[in-house]
Image (cartoon, rainbow, N blue to C red; front, side, top):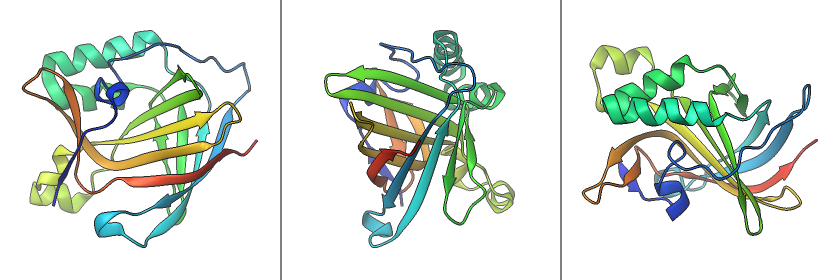
Length: 188
């Protein structure tokens, strides 16, 4: 069962298409966040711990590469472009080995900042063999909304795809319900 997820205005213009500010981490610096993921809908009542490590932020040139890939070849082009980017950080989910983020941007907000992260979703052998619909949902997205103290909330979309709406706006469609990230804090 899939659910269409229409994020906030800033997110609907999407991770790869909007940019206000690029944060730069110094050499050897990194940011680390802890959070609790809380399930909604089908995942109601399920929770797990999340650790996010950011080693560097993506540059405006990365944004252009993703925008051009999406314009030229849609979701396939975007997925391919993300896979060619180097790791900028990592998400660790309790019970898994974790995943690299290949695209991470930070945006200033009136109350703090917003961090958006994108990676390719691992496609399991069974999905490929069965040529199932979930293969179309080839990206994973995390967004954190943080106050000036590095505390806040967020959202985790483990399997999603981008689509163009009739109004010519980019939308995120999630395969399953999003996971709410609560109690987000800087753990450095």
